[in-house]
Length: 293
Length: 215
Ligand SMILES: [Fe+2]
Image (cartoon, rainbow over all chains, first blue to last red; front, top):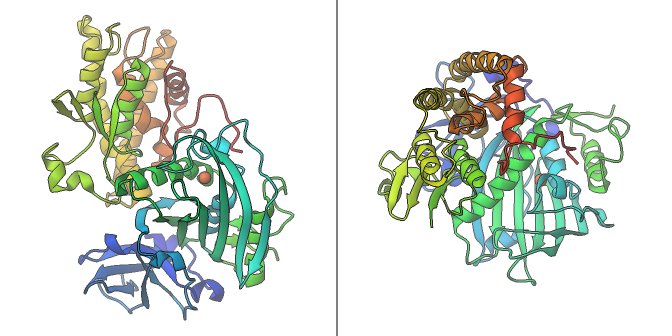
């Protein structure tokens, strides 16, 4: 049985009419590669430079051809849509000439895309899951922070946390300032104080490819101010962090994110998580979640 | 200093970090961009290992590849107790060699399933999962009978050997490849014992022995 047959194909207009990441541009090849998006089998290949082709595999007999899908190349990734996509969010700092822009690894996770977004927003797990790196006991306190909806996006500001090793290039512990941003139901960005230049902020993104309602592929995106570290070192640090999150994510039940505020205890779901769930409800998202109604 | 060409999420690299931690040997990590950079397949890396895989060690100019060969060397070179690779006991040494070969089998099945599920590698997933279950069944039975004889480890000794370290990561991370261990109670008890070895270090995906809260 193919994956497509066991997973529900998406009928959620809000999600269909968005751009979704399906591969790092650097990882596309002239040989077609198959993947899955929103329960549908799709494939992509690089044809020109850098323009890739994406198509729907609607006939298992001829996987290398099918109805073409829209293509957008942004932020080092290939994006496509199964509907009529609204504009992709902006990441202005992506165009700053001295930034390190890096695909840090696309990893399959056996949980829904919104679960991965919500975990990314959570500061409270740092000392327990990323011990010695992004957090350490006894520094477990999450101090008060603000969450607002600005131009249709979630922004969590004034977040701070004590971190023993906040980044690949950090030397020693520091209070790290965080801003979180959710500009897309399945994409989340964080801006954190840069280890080497306090006036600037590193950008780290997690772009989720919802392969099915209960599985996703996490595209780790880096846009850093760091002249010293090698690509390998930056990727290694990010994959270490994500590798620590993965088993936690995969153990959460149910795999779809419950949007009804009464379903999970409010202690676990902190302010940004509550806002994210409410925001998904207000957008009318029904795919990869357990809707409130 | 001893150098280890290493990828954080590789179980075969982790086996080396685990042994080096237990033996308290200082070493330098040379990170390899295994994924998504495929650096181990690059021309530059071919000079280090023409087979294009990791781990590789460079111990003061002595270069060695292949996970289980490296375990043999590190234990022989850096374990003064002679227990981890027990060269003075022919029968025990034979067992260690037997289970190291068995661990090549879990690399080709359980590890392959994990690479398929995590990173999208192109393996026949049903075939590798079936293969892993066949090996886990054999190992679980072996450990169950060993426990009956008051032997807590893979080989017939009162102490663990590199065979335990060679088998542990594929077993403990098997769920990441969709291989449930619910039917292997002796395997579960043995993985907990390995986690309590002094100097034990985890890798992403491995939880400490005592049930920890997920925060
Ligand atoms: Fe995390």
